[in-house]
Image: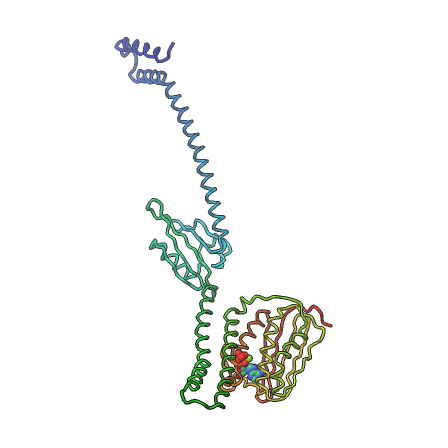
Length: 411
Ligand SMILES: Nc1ncnc2c1ncn2[C@@H]1O[C@H](COP(=O)(O)OP(=O)(O)OP(=O)(O)O)[C@@H](O)[C@H]1O
Ligand SMILES: [Mg+2]
């Protein structure tokens, strides 16, 4: 028989006898009996509901597990994206707690472990101020800052969800190289216009004189032709040197390393300047070891010693120019010694600066632009080498280049 039907029968029976029953039984006991009956009547439904609630809880737990798995997968994906991105990055939540951070950001702040960030975080002060301001104002901001001698472009991106501020993402891009290139370009344009102005105005002046209606002096014409040729050659050299310098700083010179014999290289350098050597009746000696073979960039070596020889020739009116070499386990030193005009000790520190010429008038006569030694230093440094100068006025100069390079053959 249906349990609910049976219960109703009992309840009806109870109500019928209630009046008499109350007389014998205490009301508390009666209430208890009624409660037990009600429980009995609804037991099935309660049980059913409990089973349903259990099922719902299980379902909810399963869904939560899926959501948790998905969210931890997404966090892992985000973490791996952020850690693989080359820029320092950090993501903080609306309570200024760090959610995600990559190693590059830690390195930028000289931090080894993430936990140091949440302690008394030793962030770089300018970076910290930038982060704090962007976080408090909830703004997208961009600022260039210098951290450990490097230039960074800092970017803040506030994050909103359904209009609610959820935190801020910060990205720092190292722009040192870009700014350096900009500086080089600006300097190149300024240097080029400054350096080319002099020969251009000289040529312009001569052409104006030649173009005068009654000009017919053959001798001056010949002289002007010669000077125009010299000035043009000078401009060509300046442009060539400036292009070399604008492309190359010691950091970005690309070396093309090969095996070569420096004795032969110096012979080639001397041969290329033979006419200037003979004109001045100078004597040039190549005292390098004939069978020496080294590993270095041949073209850059050629440029270095060609510049140094041209300086030695320009500074000498007589005497001998000598190339010598010496070496130990790690270094090859090649020096060039002249018996020319020499330099005062106070001038030596400046000669490697661009456009520095000790005697402007003499250097102009010799056609120099003051870029040669700047290029020499760039190329020596690109080989991790150093260059030393010893000089005495009216006695002569010695330039010594020391290269920590591999010597393939000493014999
Ligand atoms: N061997 C040397 N003896 C004396 N002075 C020198 C010697 N080498 C260089 N100098 C001085 O250093 C200056 C700078 O040399 P650098 O080679 O840079 O320029 P430059 O020879 O004048 O021009 P460029 O090499 O660009 O044609 C020279 O103008 C000269 O005054
Ligand atoms: Mg020079």
